[in-house]
Amino acid sequence: MLERDMWWKIVIVGVLTALGIASILPFEKKIKKGIDLAGGYTLLYELDDSGLEGADRTGLSQRVIEVLRRRVDPKGVYNLVWRVGGNRIEIQMPAPSKEVQETRKQYESLQQELQDTILRRSTIVSAVSRVDNRETAFAKLAKGVPSRVALLNDAAKAYDELRAMDAVIADPDKTRNAVLAALQLPADQRQAAFAPLIQELPERKDPIDALVKAYDEHMAAQAASQPTSQPTIDDATAKRLAYESALQRVLDVAIDKSVELETKFDAAIGAVVSTNLDVNQLLALLEMKPRDPARKTRLDAMVKEFPGLGGLVEQIVDQNDKLATHGDAARDVWKIRRICSGS
Image (cartoon, rainbow, N blue to C red):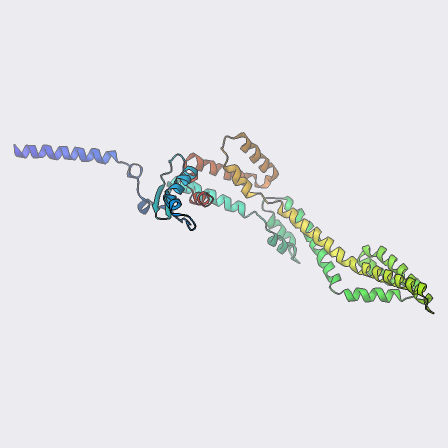
């Protein structure tokens, strides 16, 4: 009798054990592991309560947590653990599922691919300053934006013009000596002497013509001031100042041209930079609800503006929306960190 009762007890215990095990299968779905087992992230913040009175310090950490909860996880669906220790706040965030991790990995890879299409000024300047294989370098920098090649060629042309002008202004004494030497020649020989200077910079022609006139008037007034008389001396002084001013204007042509070419070069570089897709704008659009008509309209406009990157943008949007459907988008540790830091 006792033996039969023992067997019934064993059967009952076995059945209850089996039912208990069945109720928690599969383990990964029924049992929530802690961060130490399942993995996850911990964010630790220390509140700066210096300058606060005792009453204001009381409960400060808890008040801050309430604010952060409303901003980070208002519905309390992301299983965040909030802890307070003095003036420190600890936020524990479980790792997302493997499916979400894989989706996020693809999403981040696509984001990096988009980031790699961004051209920075230093990269552009390095490319246009090459003396050989420019076409190959420009083709590599196109990165899905065909219009860049023509703009890079324009920037290269502007760069070459600027560097050529640098050589002109590098030795101002050479230009000054050439101008003075030409002025001292007989009138019928000046044109030939000034020709190389005008050919180098056509903008010099009018200032040189004005200089020749001012020089001749200066020399005539100087000769007329002998013997000296106050009116003729005053006139000679005025003519000398006019001549010196005209000479300086001729010398300044190269400097003015250099400034003009520098502005042109900067504009050409800016035109290339403007072909970069605004990643921050794309991220802002991704924050909008997927069914928002304004989101679709602006995304379509972005794809139209950057047709070479349209496929990449669409893939990023698709992966972002997949993350949103899993409800894990807000569990991105970097996003939570950004929200907390900005609160």
